[in-house]
Image (cartoon, rainbow, N blue to C red; front, side):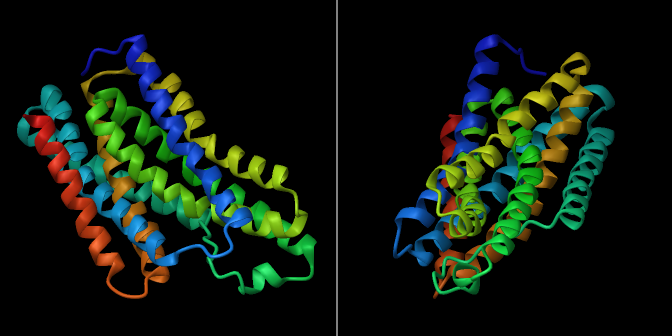
Length: 269
């Protein structure tokens, strides 16, 4: 279990906050960009997905096993980390089932942009904001605890989540801006959803801090690994494929894995 200092906490919170604020960038793309580049977004989403899957399975899952091994031994520790990983997948799958996470298209001709009944579109925006906010809580907790363990581990994960937050901002901003034509309200809606990530980090740490131990850290990291893999496979890669017009998805996926792998190799030196 790493030594936790005030500097560690401030750094972890700051990185989590920065990742959450990228949701606001999605509102800017809706309000100011007449010709968003779907192929670039496709590459970026796949890049984030590849990075998240790689770091989850090679580093975060390993950290879970190391922590559990201190309490239960190597064999039982691996079994415990596997159980935590599967529990993370089950938890985020349940959240996704109960509160589906919608994503808007970048197509300005989409019916949601042309809908005449503004109140109906406003309700769509509210539902999107609530759904995405629910999904942002575990993402914030993942970023915070990964950074608390190691900035070298947390920062790449935060970068991947930040890219992932851009289309989530679009999902909120598109219907809200169409319904209200208010840039202020659109930005505030995206900001409120993005702030769910640092809020999730604070709430999670506050609840778990009195009980921090190798078992708790092992559980958290195993669950985080499961959540990140599910999000990458369920949200990032399908969204990347929707926006692609060629091989952007596979290029982004492999590039994300390669960059993450190289960064971890350099860190271990």
